[in-house]
Length: 137
Image 1 (tube, rainbow, N blue to C red):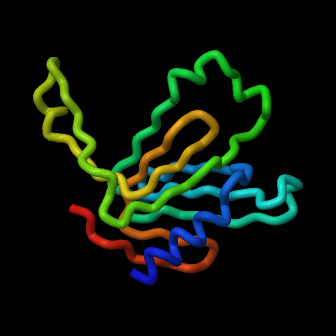
Image 2 (image 1 turned 180 degrees about the vertical axis):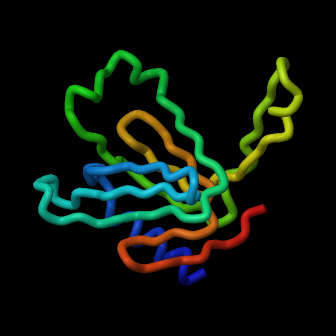
């Protein structure tokens, strides 16, 4: 349990930071963020989700009238770790039964402006500290 608290404490330190870079490496199953800690591009921290099994991006329909691209940056409003996952995320399709076999259980939720990025990962590196996460399946 100590690692779970430590992980969330480290993630809490990124509240309100600017996302300088966001990379999806599908070949190596990684998602990485470089965060600008003071908004002046002088102090950076990194988060790398490794052994990523799933990710899901949801744009809040309420924010459709707001154009965040005018700001020129993304802000990480919050990042939460759920050691047991948030619960099953399943596809339901009336068109193709294959999609109905697909499911995941995200253990991270990132609030980026008015959108949500859910990630299911088996490990995470925060700055240079590596954590193997609890099995959530």
